[in-house]
Each structure stands twice: as C-alpha cells, then as structure tokens.
Image (tube, rainbow, N blue to C red; front, side):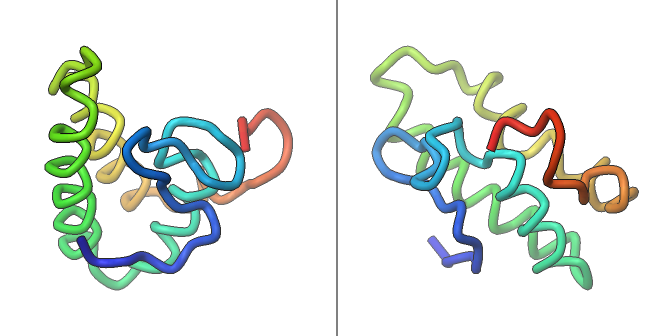
Length: 96
C-alpha cells in the first residue's frame, strides 16, 4: 500500500488511527488526504481503494461488512474533493 503523508495514519490490523484512536481514516486524516491529493482525485481514490482492499482482509474476520468498509474508506472521497473547504476545519466537533 502506498504511504500517505499524514500524522493520522492507520494502525494495522485494527485500522484505527495511531494518533487519536478513531476508525481510520479519521476526520484529520481525511483533511490531510484531501490536501495531499488536491490535484488528483483519481490518485486519492486509488490510494483509498488499496487501503480498502487491505482493510477487508484485516477486518472481515472480525465481522466488518464490505459495505460498511466501502463507506468508511471510499464514500467520503468524492464529496470531500468536490468541496474541500467544507471539510477543512480541524476544530470543534471533529472526533480527532
């Protein structure tokens, strides 16, 4: 899996954020990823799809459904890349 440049990275095999303990990608990781891949939504989708494939292997034994993992890893990308300003705040009610 290619490595993204964010402090909020995934711990395996739990796929929880190593910094805040939230399910990865946490809110801060999403902001960092959108900023990192702002020039190429396709590359972000490919990166997250690679993460999804690995997470399915790691988490399916624990009962995680592929549909839930799709929502967690990919469903947020298109809206975030379409309107990056909407998700750029790190303060307030963010879980991380």
